[in-house]
Image (cartoon, rainbow, N blue to C red):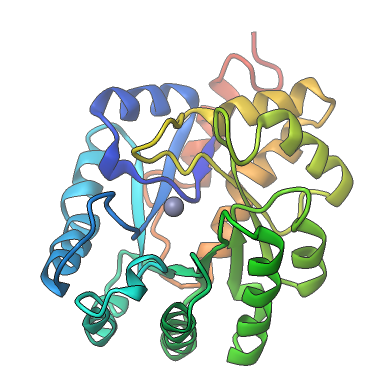
Length: 285
Ligand SMILES: [Zn+2]
């Protein structure tokens, strides 16, 4: 089984996590730019972080056989801090870099005017740079926040096929499915979404335009929940083809739209070998 985690904050994880992820089948991931827990106080701490997402963290991942790409953006929470917003002017030079496969995470946190300004500005940058956009939906008033996010996306003129709305649940999935945007789901140990609930959503909405991630950050989270969800899909009667579509080909299609996804050495031929050799894969022992 090959897994591409389309949203995971590896900066917060240990080398043991990288090793366990490799053993579980993870061969590629995307790390979105986000907040760091402790609030930033200047654009300089963003650029140091962006440089780490483009330099240090891909190197760390490569030590464990995992390909690392990132997304770059001003996150919604810090879009409210005037000490941070000047980073918007620095984004173009990062969005031009090879390892950046989307703009993100952008969107709403508490749905302020400042968040909306940063969100719309960065969707315009996504259009300008021909990049997909990763949209974080707020955890409070998720239904209202998702509807408003879809309105901002529609107004921006970006192709809905270039946008994923993430952290969806049973309440918000239908509206996003109808919009033509991609549906992102973060599987967490005790918040957001469980593997079992995810399987039920896949049964109802199918496996197209769906991204499943573990998001794993500084809070209680588990970087192996992509694999747990894949196993839950198989146990529920989905076949290996379905699992491969959700856990590998969908992220490749979505981020591949950037023209920058580089999976050399982690590509289909090699992964197909890993896939066949994996004990729980089709025909395995
Ligand atoms: Zn995130």
